[in-house]
Length: 446
Image (cartoon, rainbow, N blue to C red):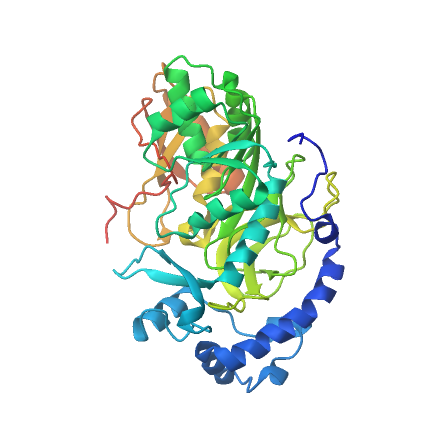
């Protein structure tokens, strides 16, 4: 199958539905899921009753969902700490569980994500649509760099099998093995974070190797924001001679929920029939209209989840919406992730996403490498100006006061925030084989 066919869809009968058509179909699934929560989830029985919803009938219809409380990640964490290992959130008997994934625990214990066989099948279906949109096709050979281990990314193995892809899993921490796989196996596709793709492009360039002669046709980047930033996408596509498209998921809901088609105009929502998505104002929590250019936070509700159902789960992913028609024929909502609330800094009342700073710094290529590190002076979200930023120069470029001031001026013009830019030589900042850290609090005052 031609991997570059425009408009190709895995599930056209679903992906060409309008948002209104999908919402009409989701109403019945939502009613069933709410009834399931009241019958099987102690967590939601208590939570909803606490907010005045005594039964499923009181919750109402999907159109009334904005009246319900949000579910926060910390609530799930607290529930599992109170009733280990799965908490009162578990809504399926343990003999029905097929796998148990986990996230790293910030306070010691991990957060467990149990799934039934039906839950896994749902994840595989959603992520198959997502990765298909991002360019993966049956018969393609694909190298991936995500670690399976205890993490939900392990379901990607099932997804690749479902898609009919010849999957070559390499994992992180194996850059030399990855390079040899690319040289010897010559896959058509690569699945990695944008940070790792940038690191790989730099490594190959430093070795004098022609990345655009490896035979890659599609690079699907996921795991962190950045792959859709014009400067980063351009650098990757120029280096590898391959089309770069984004995918995005969230472990609590599905390993991949969004996939960007070859039109490269935002990631399409791929969870139709299984997940309901909302857009809210991250400050007030009020729902926002799905209109072109609107920015907000994504909120998810599982419609067919068995083991660990979630109702109005706050993702903390901040996105901008694309609502115009797409040339691929899909009619689903499209977004580009601009950052996470977890990474947000507030400088004199101005919201600053590190990814936005990176996007501006990247416009100064080829004088800079694209690597940067924000080093706040004190711990916490709120910072006083100027915000310290370390920017790495490109190979062979000498530090220049004029360049530092030009970067500061560009950031001030775009983000309305004052910064202090320090230029360092190429290679001074760390590289990542997974996600790049953009904020460093190690020297900050408490």
